[in-house]
Amino acid sequence: MNKPPHATPAICREQALAAWQRGDMAVAEQAFQQLLESLPDDAEALQFLATRQLGRGDPERAIELLFAAHRAQPQDAAILHRLGEVQMLAGDAAAAADSLRKGLQVAPGMFVARLRLGVALEQQGRRHEAMLAYVGAIDVAQAQGRWLDDATTAPGLRDAVKHAVRYVAAGRRELFDAVIEPLRQRYGRSELARVDQCLAIYLGEQAAVLPDPRQRPKFLYFPGIPSRTFYPRERFPAHARLEAAVDAIREELRAVLSQAQDDLVPFLGTNSGEAVAGHLLGSSGTREAAWDAFFFYRHGVRHDMQCARCPRTSALLDSMPLVRVRDHAPETLYSVLRPGTHILPHRGVTNTRLVTHLPLIVPPDCALRVGGETHVWEEGRCITFDDTFEHEAWNRSDRDRVVLILDSWNPDLSEAEQAAVTDLVAAIGDFNRESGTAPAAPPRQP
Image (cartoon, rainbow, N blue to C red; front, side, top):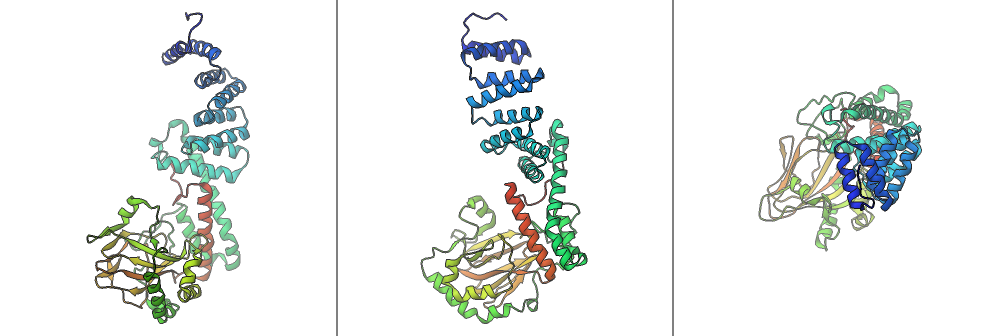
């Protein structure tokens, strides 16, 4: 290659890139080497030369060059990814994991880097961490429409992705089995046979066979129990205490509504966004749709200030046999459906727990529909339904409609099954949070 004796960095780069594009790697390398004489911290040149050294079978020199590129561009996640890849080729899985983690802190969406991190951790025998890395890789990739099948997976990654899916499946099975095993020992395997089937369905090891096509849980389906839209009142004897105290509960509600309603919050959350609210709420009039809540418990967390403002209601709720799952349940609240608001059809997460309404203020033209069956609330009379059936509610009046909502265990679950579901759901939640992705279901096999 003929070069001026004092070629500028721009000329060297131009020559290097042109040679690279036409496949003349030797000329490109020479031009990049000359570029480094003027710009020793040029990350592009350092990365190219690292690849050349790796091709010559010198990963140690390649790593040195990539470290230099990283020092020059410390926030370049692609350099850290490449460094981790080369460190793995050099047999240093611990260093590779460190580089890949740093790269993912900068760019969490690099699913191939997550996959390689899983490999590096697996090589070190760090099984649980490897499983979490694999879950993250698969979840991020599949959220972007990748790794769903062979057609959406790069040929060079297919075996690694399939291994990751199998690894996650085995690890999750082992983890959740360990959660249930003490209860198997306590109650006997036969008592928890339906729980074992429930877990197999959740893990995708077997298909759910739902007896009613209207029912589709979004998260956890418990097999072998009757599918019903509305449940008979006699299945919930404790609800009689709520009905007997309806006047006291309504009195505390009216006190809340009569004051500045700072404790009322949108049921869907202040950060849910207009798109989510638009998907779940509609308006039948000129007013904007609104569904507000006064929470006593939310996702299993007690709201002490609200409970203190309504002591009789709170005490009654605390005395009820509510579903109690760490970080998930109970969910108890005054549910305030504003005039003209329609909660559009949607489905709940699991048939292991049911939803109970104690109607407190019910104007005309308000109703609840579950699985196509319409129910008109009666003040002071509890109604319990399975929200894994498609359901909706509306208030077509010009006044607020308010019901007290609480969770109830599905009465067709035994005590042992309730205990197992409690521990299993908490463990699934822990795993999903720890993985940083919170998938609703196991990843698909590509």
